[in-house]
View (spheres, rainbow, N blue to C red):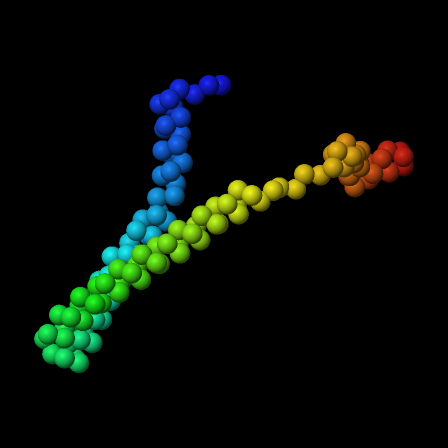
Length: 119
């Protein structure tokens, strides 16, 4: 069966939407890191050097938050990529052909044969 261009595009977009939750979580890491370290820098800078220190602390906190957020996103994406490769690479057990073609007798079959022999 040959798929047309629009059908294959739809299949790819449906597949991509299944991973949307984890990418949404990854994309929220960067702004959270920036905002949290901005606030930490503002509080620490304000307590050390007053209003000027709060401004410089907020700026430094935002820069460090950005760098930390980018690194965090990089590590998370690398983890997800490795996990995806590992799940695709996992092979399923395939029994040998002799085992597939082997004649199997179940306990129920032997119990019925015993009953038929008794009659």
